Length: 328
Ligand code: HEM
Image (cartoon, rainbow, N blue to C red; front, side, top):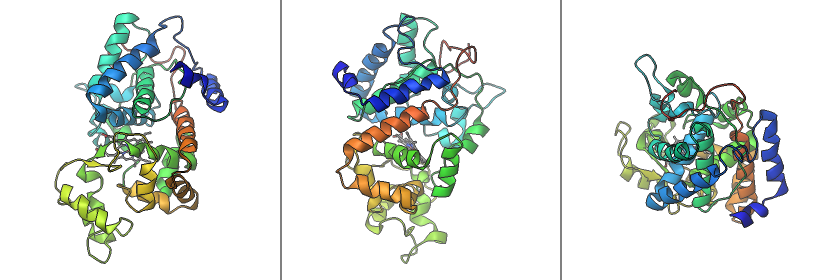
């Protein structure tokens, strides 16, 4: 790891360090909990070794956290009798990995009680999930604090929907300070993980946008659609069987997602939509050649650093939760 850090491009270090604007710092816990990052890494190695398919869900948890009230671990809070929390909002029903976050947080609490925020834990776990899936490493500036509010309605409004087209997705990303490049780059996270039938069933059976066969969304390759229909049998099938979003390498962080999208085999409308805008299409097609893997890894690192800075709480705001699922 030391060697990989040493070889990090200066631009990434500068970008991460410029998080100082948001009062985050590289090495924030160097005095208060020097082994924090090592503890997260050690646990993540065990978690991913036991369940490699958790890399995707842990990356997604961080994304869903950052897009609602910023990266403040609000996604981790449980609902209470008077409050339906984000994690019970419809788009969050398919989130996984909460138990792993509590496990890592438990180790940190044992080593340095009340010091490391759940928001930082999530950010580090997402980064380590990508590294352990053979993706890039990027430096993570730390010092996020945990929010005290978690509202399901906000999650339903702020998260990008699977049916989103580029104008809608770009608008949602812009509202978080992320641009069109971040959209096409971060969509590359769909190289990891699986999806449930209701996330894409309308592309297989929706007659309003059906192609000549009366079934398939014309922006979806028909052979691929036929395969998907075996796993997702109808519009109201319920969750159905899981589909890999990057078939063949859904546990490995690589660029094959872009090759699927370029061949009209992106799973969601939001993936397919990347071919409808000149900027995003050009990016998809370039990375799909397989000649720009390193550039994609660097772009992904940069966009993740940006996403990890969205709406963070610092200073005296929020709190450092003792348990991630409940306020202190
Ligand atoms: C561009 C807008 C995005 C949309 C519309 C979108 C939508 C979705 C949907 C519908 C699922 C499947 C849920 C299910 O059926 O279980 C999913 C899964 C996933 N998303 Fe996204 N997503 C977007 C961006 C992102 C970003 C920015 C990241 C991370 C940086 C991300 C990471 C993931 C991962 C890793 C999974 C797989 C999770 C698993 O295996 O359980 N997505 N996404």
